[in-house]
Amino acid sequence: MANLFSELQQRGFLYQCTDEAATKRLLDESSVTFYIGFDPTADSLHIGSLIPILGMMHMQKAGHRPIALVGGGTGLVGDPSGKTEMRKLLLAEHIHANTQAIAAVLKRFLDLDEPRGLLVNNHEWLAELHYIDFLRDIGRHFSVNKMLAAESYKARLETGLSFLEFNYMLLQSYDFLVLQQKHGCILQMGGQDQWGNIVSGIDLVRRVSSVETYGVTFPLLTDSHGNKFGKSVKGAIWLSADKTSPFEFYQFWRNVEDVDVKRLMKLYTFLPVEECERLGSLTPPLLNRAKEILAYEVTALVHGPETALQAFRAATAHFPPSDPEGLVATSSALAALAAPKAGDLPEVAVPASPEGARIVELVVLAGMASSNGEARRLIRGGGVKLDDQSITDETLTLTPEALALKPVLKAGKKRIVRLVPA
Image (cartoon, rainbow, N blue to C red):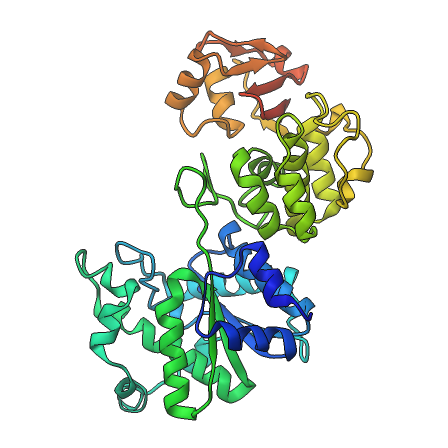
């Protein structure tokens, strides 16, 4: 792509570049091998990780060769970047399982088979290091003064930085050196909190191999309130359906703040930039159509078009259409989808009990509250409806006969499920 750099810039992917002019030439005029690392701190990735993944997808579509690195080695140490305290150390077998799970997630988005791309695990070379040799050959190129000046370390000096974590910058820098020497990788990309590690890797490659390499960082997103983007009431929004259901995933995007729609459409969809600008500039109530498009596009990317369609239909089955007159033009496949069906609501199975089920417990079971106390407050505030009837009695119990009718439970305006006997 002749204008890839500009495309990434307009979409909001570029936060920092080590050499903007050289990086622009690199992306627009050549085909390069680049890498991004993902540490296996969990058995899935969340929507914050979609930013680097989508960045890699844009790069691969433009003819560049991605290396997705899963940190089976660095994960045993823990990256201090962006953390106020030391990460909990995971057992080696947990790291191994997480590594396999994350590799499977990455393969859903990228072609990581040679020659188009590559999937690597840095445990392959880091586990074989002889520590004294490593310190002599690699450690001598690092200045402790410079390391302590890096934001990832400086922010931790007050709360405490373990010697184990202090080694992380050396290990990530060594990753870059290995990938440059073995695979011709000359560009590292990552979140903005990785800037210090990336710059150190570039310096190491220059000192050891006399090769010029480059670095690019993506922004760490916050919402309109300044909170880290990608959290819901129940926690992180994951890319795996068994951790965040497709319906809940869709609803997260459908309910983003108005002021965030344009920025998120440019980052998280492949719709043309001009269309993202236009849709994100709509005013309510038509802006809700833009949110539906955003939610559908991201859900289709992560879970597939058919699952995204089911989530869309479930979400709109009991609400009026956001654009009944078809005023909003879009290139999204959502424009051609059939009308929603009432039977597509997500179902929550209620365990059988001769006494029935308490409304408070049902609200928690449906994921509309994280505790009985929160459910009671939601009910007292008039935020819960059963078959469109407001519930104010927090002691209400639904009999087995009532549950057999498969009532619809709502919380607020957006969260809606059908209760069915297990």
